[in-house]
Image (cartoon, rainbow, N blue to C red; front, side, top):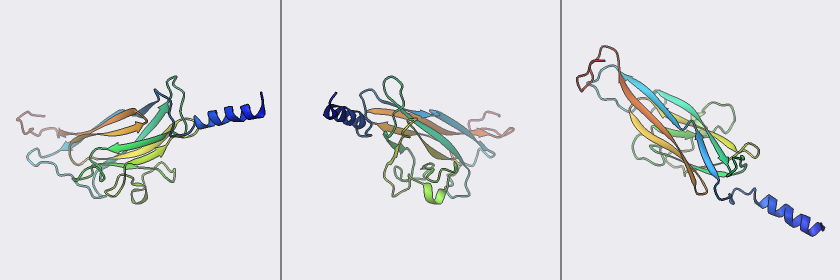
Amino acid sequence: MSVAIKYLVSCVYLSACNSGQLPVGASVKLSPSEHKVATVVNNPNEPPVCLTDENGSYQDLPILISVTDTSGTPMGNAEVLLYSDYSGNTFTGPDVIQIFADTNGNGVVDADTELVSGIDSDAYKTITDQYNGTAMVFVRMNLTCPYSGSLKAFVGSSVAQAQLEVFLTYAVGTVEPAGKLQ
């Protein structure tokens, strides 16, 4: 094979790794794809209030994003667009779901520097790891009030969704508003 043909073939292979050119049928997956948390209500006659200060009750949930081709091979350097219901950049009420990028790699949310879904943020873009085709974000779920929302990931024409829910449960011995004893 001539040097020019080898060079051309190499360029074609390298351009296939570009995050802007995904093969038809590429797919994205979020793990876990569902997360539900119960919040305990001691007095069912007082409706829960969403507290959104840093002293509120929350849970940080790591979400693994995986991008693969049609044969299941991981796709490195793929651009993933993330969007969440009820975040500061998508909802005018309390931002009960927040997305954080672990930019320093310590595995812990640093709220003051790693929030990527604040009121002034665009939808968050991340790139999958070159070798294993994955990326990680943390979702902070506010636990002070009930809601059901989702985190959505877009890669080319593929969409994945993780359902996120906080639901009420009543303390033992209390009477639910509907009159059922717990």
